[in-house]
Amino acid sequence: MMSQTHQPTAMSVCPSCEEPLDDGDRFCGACGYDLSSEPATASPEATAEQAAEVDWPDAPELTGSGTPAPVHLATDLAGTDSGGGELPAAVRFDDPPDGDFELAAPDPRTASPEELEAATPASGTKLCVACRAGQVDADGYCENCGHAQPRERDHMEQELGAVAAVSDRGLRHHRNEDAFAISSAALPDGFPAVVAVVCDGVSSATRPDDASLAATRAANEALHESLPRGTHPQQAMHEAIVAAAESVNALAQEPETAREHQPHQNAPACTFVGSVITRELLIVGWVGDSRAYWVPDDRTAPAARLTEDDSWAAQMVAAGLMNEAEAYADERAHAITGWLGADAYELEPHTASFKPDRPGVVVVCTDGLWNYAEGAEEMARIVPADAALRPLHSAQVLVGHALDGGGHDNVTVAVLPFPVAQQGAGSA
Image (cartoon, rainbow, N blue to C red; front, side, top):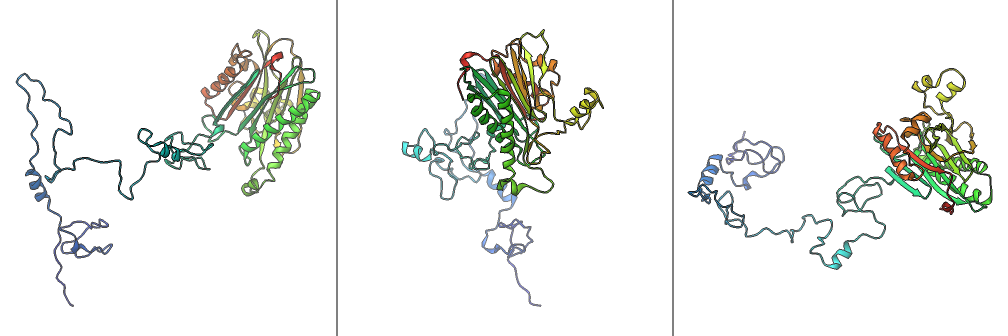
């Protein structure tokens, strides 16, 4: 066998792939790197001796009075590197070498107006809430720093004169599948009607957030078409529920649902609860287990729940098989028996009309709230005393109550004072 003489090397690892080397290796056994072209690495002893020869600046000693020596600034000493060589005179940041990264946005303190204008995103472009420089892509992430952006529906608030609503994602869900719509419309007699619609997307269905949003919009539009024509508010509410159901049914036919839809999944679905208030009447309509409560301003008068759930628990109570406490303690309590959606057994809109004899407020909400204040008296206790004067504040307080209780679900609340003031007329 022919033998070869290898030049010895002092390197312990390959400078290319960091594979351990043996004495005398000319090439790396892992990546084939030519070791003969690398200068031998100095031994640790030699490095220590070299470091010892560096003429480091002496630290000033204490003065006779014990006063500490003055602190030196970095620019006061010439300084050397660990090998004894001189350091560069200055470090520059304004002219990075080719291939280095560039800042996401120009420095507003030094950039020219032209540079700032060129870096300004087009109107309507969303900027990252974290770095305030990168644009947000279609998936909701910053193109510069990668930060996930909060979604618009995670927390929503709206106030419109005599009605207000708040919706929050809660503390456990990754998105908000609730939606609401509030508005006011002028009736033929010139008096206003105030409207609130709240929908809760069915999480086990496909696109529940789209279902709730479509239902609230369709119902609100239907009410604005029928109420000014003189349709009785209770009939208008019935027609609004039908319109909402049709809008949710239509989602099942869209290509986006068809791609997501699997045999074991349900079509888009949601629950519904709404209220229309005039100067004399209080109308509610519902399908599912979202609720409406009546809370009088005079808290010595009784509060009342205005809706009956379409749920397993409600059916057990109605059939006399369980009392309410037993039914709602069962794990099947919140299984709904009515909803809006193409997979619903049969659409059965519920509507009711009331004529309160005193002022108060109507609380329209999803189960994200009433899970923490189920009974009418419990709900009355957490509604602020000035709810009729400050509906938005009251809705915020009620959402806060649910979050303080654990926020296990999305929570949406609308507060409508009764009766409606004359100046609330007008559409929106």
